[in-house]
Length: 471
Image (cartoon, rainbow, N blue to C red; front, side, top):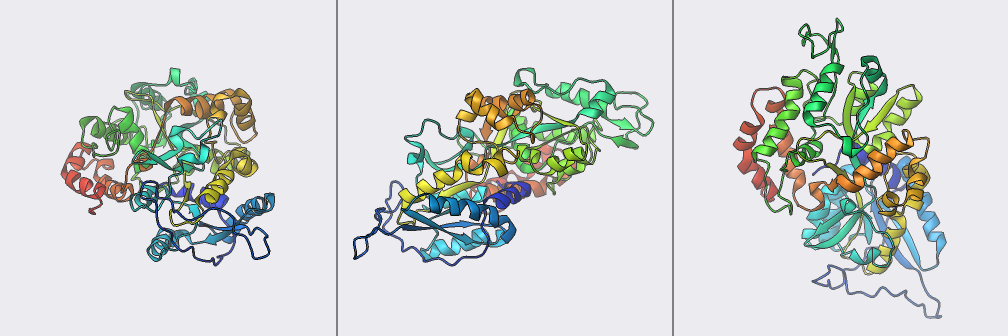
């Protein structure tokens, strides 16, 4: 599945280096068939004079020169922190990132480690190009949450750099004007889907001030919508899960989006516009929903990733936007999804242990604290921040976040107890599947066909995309 472009930009902004650096290609050693790691030695080499040379690692990423500067500072700190490992950056444009990595893989000269697109992780794992990194946290008191862990054939192959989850944002001033209580922050009080629609009707106003629950409401002259549930494919998955189904079965081996529970969930999103008139028409083609709804003050509620707190909502808050965060409403089951771009260790490296040491250091919250976590762009991945009150306060008692109790309930407790990983964490070919799905759902959003019709008509093509056979 394709991660939203906003998150990719955020990751690039915060993970990447300045200039395109050339690097000495690593000669592929014989691969260990069971782990995918190389059998080359990870011992530091010794010069003829007996001095120990540093292990040289290469790290690939995407991003501009400006975006790369922050990461270079972090790499400089790592390189200066010890005398055993030195990391050199390999900058590759985002537009050609996976193409370049595939070319490198064919030539046997992949970097030692690098940033990876979410949808590319399982594809590289299937080709034997990623190392098993399950030993990375073997001796650690805390390890990343399951919702931040990529797995392949039962092995942990990557950990997300951030545990960003889907949440609901709302305009407090609009709720105050309508005399309505704010959406619940505690999962125990989460709205049912019917309750959510009812509130959205009361917040949807026509030019005469009538809300969508009024018999005098004019659906052709709406000036304020109650909600916008984004219909981008990466978000639609959560509603299928909430309704008791999903795009795939639990282990990602079968396409189940044709189940009635899944098509009903997708139809419910469309009906917010088509039937209830509480949401604007959205075709799911752009990923600027927070800007178009909450920040533009056209909608009272919207859904999107938690990284918006530190990106577009940060500036909007400074300009006077009075917003809050809440848990998602639910259909049958309370659930949200988590995602985050991972750093991986490529199996062609001759130094897997050192590469894992660097990636673990690089991914630690302490090394991305000020500019990412405290700023509200990234959520921590390790479990301590979700279970230890002192660490939770360190994380969420920061000016970038909403009021602490609300932030803790939504970003900590809700994510810890109800978040599941998006499907690209455990099944392959999600990019092709989601691209096809997004293209065929257009008729659903405009009401030309039902979700059930569209999915059933295109089910064989969706299965073919899932199987890697193209659409």
